[in-house]
Image 1 (cartoon, rainbow, N blue to C red):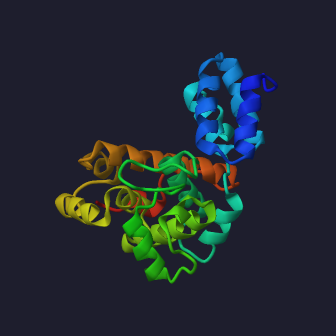
Image 2 (image 1 turned 60 degrees about the vertical axis):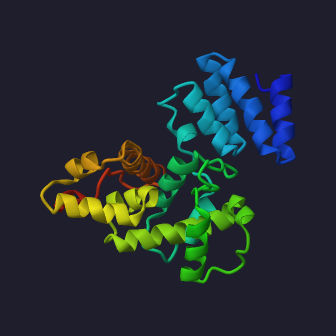
Length: 240
């Protein structure tokens, strides 16, 4: 399965960093295979540290029980470095990146967000100034994993602190903006619990985003040897 001409093309393209073409070849290859073969391809990509291709294969094959391949500890050393000294848990930052890009470091959104943590140009500029991050001068640098993780974890730390270290709020803010979250909090006025607050978010994309990030964080906590919990006692216990 991994020795055919299609896989040879994928390997060659990945070797030469022709990532977008490689992903297209990979998508066609995975689509043409049985579910068993898709699982084998997902594992092959995982073993080669092609993190986004591993995730892509699990999605194509609906391999929901293949958790390692769905949630690889991608760029683990970089996330460990850039969450060290910050209040955000490493697992949470990785959950955000997994939701944002499915580990594709070169992805660009139609609205201009770039890279692993899908950072907008204005957000990058603001965050670099706020945290005095050296060496950033152009948007293309957001496609570099280290630069993206450095800036992305710094911005996540900012919104996390803005909302009292509450991942429900900071996840919604990362997706929809802090101003909208403050509006929603004003509307709920402390009358509802955590689950009701998430369900009351008026944007379906943001509702799904928050739910996914909390679940992905639990998976990453598990793979990092921590106790997986969907919400902390503080997040669960307060009124929204």
